[in-house]
Image (cartoon, rainbow, N blue to C red; front, side, top):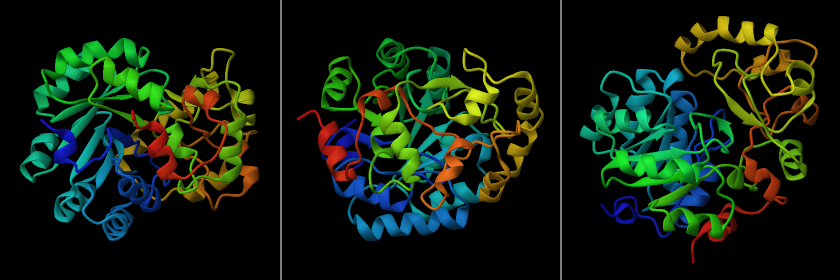
Length: 327
């Protein structure tokens, strides 16, 4: 399959659909207009539909992709994707009762994000059109369990000729070339696009990423979603994480008990961030957005991959696409 032709791409570069409002229409449209695959992060169904329309207005004749985080997806999210006729959906962290087949029957190209050989094989059995092979060095929430280039051959073997995009450790054109040389069809970058003017991220958050000298893998920001994730350290992690990054017993127990909250689906939980404090062991998965006060970056998840150590500046989304292109 010629994925570039199917998704109208000029370059084999996709932008990660960072949820919680980080990857909105402005970022996805800018990436799409520059020839990459712009991806909308999960939002409320109403917000998602409006964002799809805005991307189409700003980047006509380009593909629109949506990232669906399965723990928080309800039928209304799926209906938006089908009714709006989006070109591509990325399913992450599971599958729900034939959802892959339902989306494919609607003419939507379906990627499934995987981090193990077993997950890759399961995604192909579900009927996925392609895989996103996530390495452990990626930012945000993790299914990856090993370095991306180490995992890639296993994903390729499971894919059986279907396209595989590599995610994790992608910061520049050299990383893209290495991924393509190893057999990937293209790459997915998150932190590189987080560090753009079009990302809906708090500027102090971006400054922390630019100055980061390490990232940690933790489960601290797990209210309703106690899954591993990679972040830049802040006051919250220094207070509530062990030396290995794992959350201490109290916040870990609170997050585990809150897992059923995911059944509520995705909703605008910004008010909960106001209640967070480095002094209290209750932390949602929310990242600080552009409108968030700078002081809140020490109470929120500062998602970033290990490439944060190699990305020290903000740029435009178009420049990021160019810098990631294999040339």
